[in-house]
Image 1: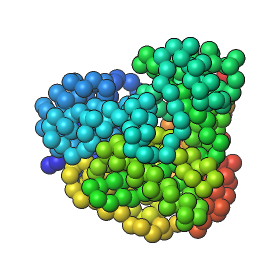
Image 2 (image 1 turned 90 degrees about the vertical axis):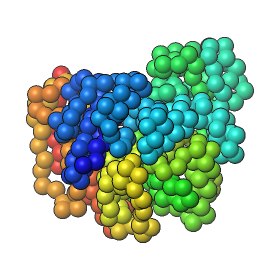
Image 3 (image 1 turned 135 degrees about the vertical axis):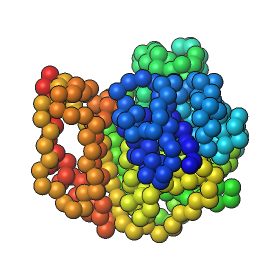
Image 4 (image 1 turned 90 degrees about the horizontal axis):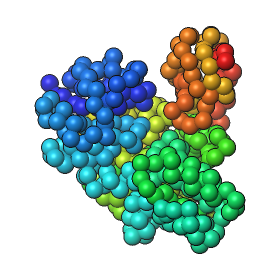
Length: 391
């Protein structure tokens, strides 16, 4: 029996854990202790921090695993690269893992690889931040270089905002520096897919964004992203350049891309599949099981992908504008085109008001003949879902 180690036990890892067990694979999960739903779905659990390279390597060795992987989170990617390299497992290299989990390092590789991206500066002090803002010219974005889920990111429009923004980003990071990046005026999309040794599966998709006052937070996605053939070609060319610059091979990826007119700019790339329902939406969009593809790839097996979609798909996380105790959850009549409604919490649980991605309370997924139809189904489903919260 094959044995795999999945890092993380949160809501985005649960479907991966379940699929692995469905495939008859002995599934080991590691995460810090906590009320994480993935623990109850695993064959064996280790309460180790997924960023502890040596601890996870020890688990992988002792358990003689055939693969190590995750989805939906950047936190464990460096550890995965380290363990894959140490044990000769299929996966990204440690160097590539370091690049994709540090935005400053990533941007430097983009620059050297001729990837079209926003102008940027790495800064360690308030004075350097002010100088960077003048050099690049505002508006700019301040970014923590090692965080995901839109944490540590804030827009700066004038000099009066620099000091608070610098503190905000710096206190959100484990590093002693942050990134100052030119704010690009355009339309933000996501791109997910897979890169093998000599081929690519590249899937641009529309984003549903929610402003938290500091930045736009992705709360959903729609497939496909409709655009001209010339723009799609440009997106694919820039994605390929970025993957090459980061040394990614036999890897699933998730990218943030800004569309400015007829040109695409790569904001960042993660060496794992995206979160916020993306694996489910790709599965529906192409009529495949994307989680199964991730598992087979990690086990070193050849994976291939269809090129023609079967329908449009859309998903959005459920969220609350107030924190407190859930007193009731109900779902009214919904269309057969609603593929999934998931709640992360139950009546009696306490939730946070939505600010960043991890504050989700569930999600809803739907499909249609086209994006417009799928979006209508989704909006009707959202109206049928009631979550009552008491302060």
